[in-house]
Length: 160
Image 1 (tube, rainbow, N blue to C red):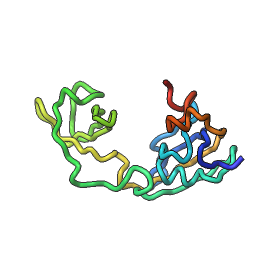
Image 2: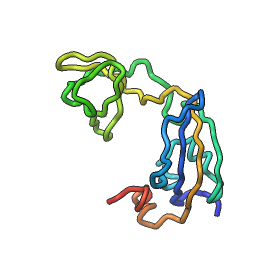
Image 3: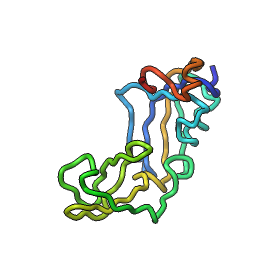
């Protein structure tokens, strides 16, 4: 069964940087599940998976434009220290989570004072060429409800 739009796809991945260093993996965890063709996955990863078969293992190296985007040097913002999540004491270079109108966002601390911090709101992997080692674990036709909601349900997908 070839992967195509309106399918729920499950996959495992390992993410590597330009030097081949492992940055992330879901090894030992549940597979990632997403609804193919509904902009739920990075465009480069979704394009690489399109047309593949369950059981296939492959690697794809992608430019920043197809993953986390290019770095924008004008993406600094001042936020109240009380909105930073992840530590009690903050230092430049540390990563924090903040809540936004679009959900949680990871930021990098640039400068921190007693009450305010300057943060870089670029994704930490923005501007980098990344390699994804992928293994397609499963695929099935999406339910009408999943298509209507625009995302996969169940294990590895969205839980209502």
